[in-house]
Image 1 (cartoon, helix red, strand yellow):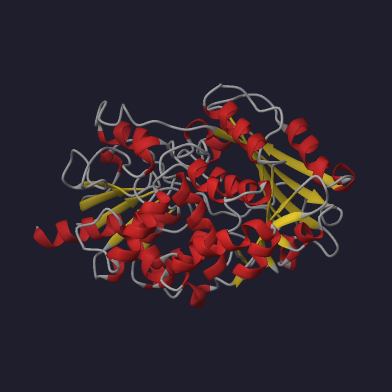
Image 2 (cartoon, one colour):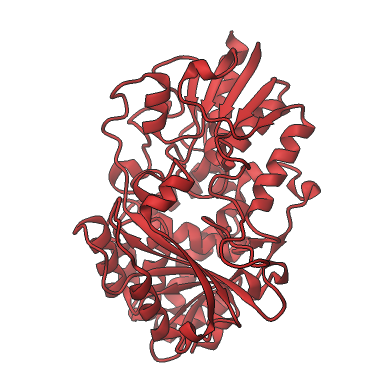
Length: 469
């Protein structure tokens, strides 16, 4: 009998399997698709030689993750590449606010009236980032925080809505960049703890950067799988699990799946019936004949580029997708241009480009024209660079990755108390009605992103049980 079986080879399932194997437990991992990866894959979606990331592409949380930093992933081929600027947010006048590794450069891009306010906001946390991110991303656990004073100070700033945090700034440049950071998790700007979301992304950029993985996000998953095999674990792909009886006998079962799928497989009925899924996304991967012709020079040097004319436009786009059940006329866009720093991603002189906008849950329309009209506002002539495009709305995204229910790439709404208390109100969020079954997907704390911390945290709960039995 195995000690543990893990279902789902996304970053969290892989991390949970690695953590258990590191502690001497026998582990087998089962994945329905033909390759490991989940939200961290790389494929030729458009033309030969153009390597795209179907989901996550830039990795500010992965490079800061306590789980990943404790593993020898570089030994297994993972290499982080840092663009000259982690992120830029261009405006219609041809200028841009930036999120730089330098706090000074970032503050200066906001203008003289807000430079000091931004410095005062981030400085208390910069030199305590490694401890803060461990405390922040490890909760809820029974262990006490390593730096409770800094964590409490962060909570005072982060728990209110981001609209409150925006009041610290006089001008629209800082407010718009902050609104864009919050929108990365598709949360309404006036939602609970949205200030923390924006602040985490900003601090990550200043301390560790917003890198891409050389060769694509698949490198993260492949490194985790290689380390798991090195530790004696086994990986089985093309193995769809429809019920617990499909799996070999084990002392514990760990699911990197949506709560809906877990309830169906394990026979938990309506145990997660109140769990809410959020808006979907419409994603386009482009093969380009040259770099994106951004009007703002800063955007040409950035790995990630946020697109939204101002905070009001960003807020309206989020409300349309999450509350008004319609596609926004001017969608907020998150874009990544990996080939500005990684020439392996496209043939010489060509580029790959990654973009998505928010749409209602389960939306079946086509946002291509709206996305490209928005891009043309900030990069005139963009359409002339397009060699090929691969589009994916909520149905296609859900078909590629079953965890993306209704196209929700966060595997659950990041709003209200569910921002922190996922998938149920519980001190033990990784436990389920069955004592030997656990959940470790991004539907559990600390939530969405390629960082492995839900898997890391869930593995702790599993090995405590295994040691008791």
